[in-house]
Structures are given as C-alpha cells and as structure tokens.
Length: 158
Image (cartoon, rainbow, N blue to C red; front, side, top):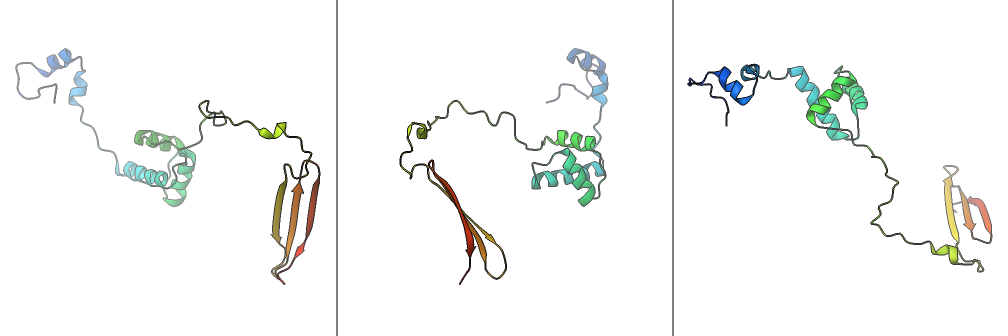
C-alpha cells in the first residue's frame, strides 16, 4: 500500500506530502545498496558470531584482521553488529542473587552433636603420576569433626 500516488493525479506531490506531513525530500529518496566490501565484512562478522556467540566487538575485530585479512576498527564492528542485531553473550548482573520462588533447604548439621566419630566424615583421594615407570604418589585425606589426618605414600603397578 502506497500513501503517495506518483502517477498523474489531480493533486501534485508537494500537496500530497503536505497532507501526509512528510518531507518532499523523502518522496524522492532512492536507497543505495551497500558496498560489496561492507557486505563481505558483515558476512565475516556473522560467521565469527555464529561460531562463537560470546565474542564481542573487540575480539571480532582481532579475528577479522587475523583470519579474514579485513582491517576494520572496533567502532565499525560495533556499528555492523548493531545493524545486524547481534550482541555478544555474557553473564548478566545479579547472578548470585537467589530466586525468591525457589525453596530453601535448612542445614541440618548445625543441630547434631558430633559425639560419634563417623559424623561429617570427608574422604579425599588424590593420585598424581610421578614417573613413566608406573609409580604414583597417593594422598588420602580423612577429616571428621573430631580428628583430621592425611596419609601419603607411593603406589606401584606391581
């Protein structure tokens, strides 16, 4: 649907523009297609963003120069990203704030007296390779509310 009748009519274009509250200049405007270099830059930005949506304008600028041999400054990359409607994905604010709708479970360990040695027992076992001959260093950590101990030694495959 066109609001302005460009064919021969009883009302000239200037009067039609006044009736529609449009500037006459906008009636004669012909949009210019983008330059091929700009299209190539936008395609490269889209390819980079599709591979890594977390990249922002600074990282995309570096990748354009390194991998695509396109020298574009950061502000131009920001403008192209804004025109394309893409934004680097990043964590938002207040991620540590809890959701009030989620249920909070109380910590029941505060009301237990650790009279028995088996309460709150924690076992941690680490293995680290020392040599290619198959010798390993082993560290076992056992912690309870009453005592803490660490044992270590060398374990072989034989």
